Image 1: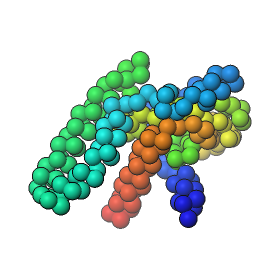
Image 2 (image 1 turned 30 degrees about the vertical axis):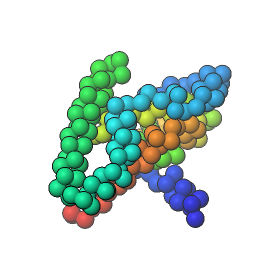
Image 3 (image 1 turned 60 degrees about the horizontal axis):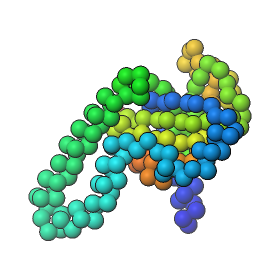
Image 4 (image 1 turned 120 degrees about the vertical axis):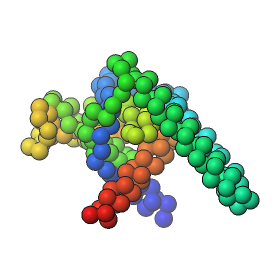
Length: 196
């Protein structure tokens, strides 16, 4: 049963807009990065670190909620306020070219993504990807391999090619953050559909 759940988690995909940086890697550099544990290559964002701390405090909050729901609610509100401040700081941090913004349309899943570009990438090309998810400003660093690159008549001009990539290395904490993000996006889409 766990294998089925893992496959469902990896195959679930959502159309969204992110900030995306793609860098093609030579075989030697890709192998060097692949041999380094993902946790050591992560550009851990403030938001990611804070979500990790929130997850660690989850059991404590459950116990507090049982003992005093008002205090638990107050702590949850404080946690949300801190998340908002962290997201604002992450947004203004930028990537060397100013503040990041959602500038790239992608089809995103826990196991990889598809994006559009002017020129194709060769199947099997090795990539380093840096994503920023919105509105949380969670940063994801991953290694990936191009699964396919094909002309797409529906691509937004001046882009012509849809490139699908599979993650080959991503830190478990970042994959968990990505899955949470995908679930939040799906929930928002379902709420919008019900509201029609």
